[in-house]
Length: 509
Ligand SMILES: [Zn+2]
Image (cartoon, rainbow, N blue to C red; front, side, top):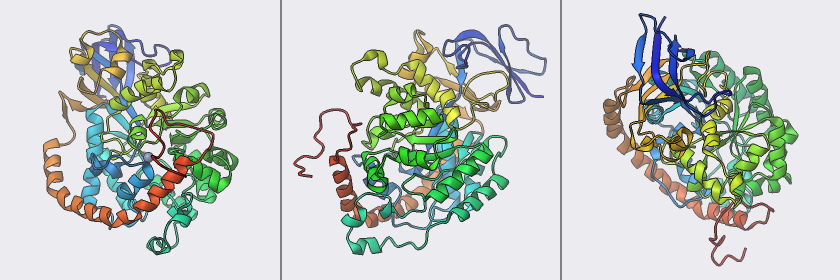
């Protein structure tokens, strides 16, 4: 039996009883599980003791939505809406998939940055075209297993041609460019579902921490039979059906152009709004959409930073909360956010909704944001019985912050200082399933210096190849810009933009 007693701490449980109010006490971990929380707990002689005076102990943060495939693209782009940015971050014309060592290091780097910044669970919507390869998925699982993070990992699926998943694309794109995008028959539902079953059989539940989740990319990118098969399997296995819906206005227009209704109403009609459904973004949802989502008990991953980076708009978070939708926070990939830090997303999400309207009684509070970053996030991952709060019987996924630090000097209010002042720099210790993965500001499970040295060695050649790939894909940019322009000018009776910039200078739309 391994035992750790954390004593004399300020403890923030974020559970149903104590919420976000800290109290002074001790926390006992036995075999990776929280065994007791209270005052004056007595350590068994064999227990290791963490003296936590002047320390705040809180649940590890959950990153509800990210893509490890973007980890090497930090700081590479700006000033592009999603549909243009995708051309470079997820090129239509592809090179061979990244080599296995870099694949491993890329996943590892994301997990390392996450852990260092207090994120103990990541939901990685792993995108690895063109094929679904169990051995490559295993490489990602290996990285998360080795570094000690908790993770849900998908293998993102789509089987509708890009040109049929975007409004006006066939009309706007010259035929010679369309001809360049003939990649042969897409994955069938059966092939993908067989692959998922193999992933469940061979990888799911690795070390009790690394799980497989099912991720049809988006309702406009997947056929109904693929999505329905995914939902059946997600429900059977108790894992999320993790997808992207209504991130951009272009996607809002897509629903109306393809189905004559919003993509949420379309999903509802197919029976795809369920408790297992986790929707990344949910920016361009209508009141009717939100009602359907709340009634079904779906979750969303709110990617407040990414949505601003790509100019997507501001998700109606207060109305989603009022409708009963569960909310977690996501960074989205490091290419549309530039970091893997949930603390940054907390701060932005805590601030941005205050400019959505002058009724200050509706602004989103630090308490609400802190719950989204912890237990709400765990629920988006369908891991709320395992992590996301400090409760007896749950896994010991926790972080210990030194409150003798700038963000906490002086200590006024835990939730507000965590949301508005902290940036991860006060984190001293990070524990996942009772195992210390970061201590005294260093990761304990990997040699960070060696990993950085190897990345510095390997990446220049790979990034040079990517630069060449960007050049080849730039040929599609005018088409994507025109689709974006047409959609931006479309009147769909909904607005999620703020501020006073013109839609398009001189546009005659
Ligand atoms: Zn995403």
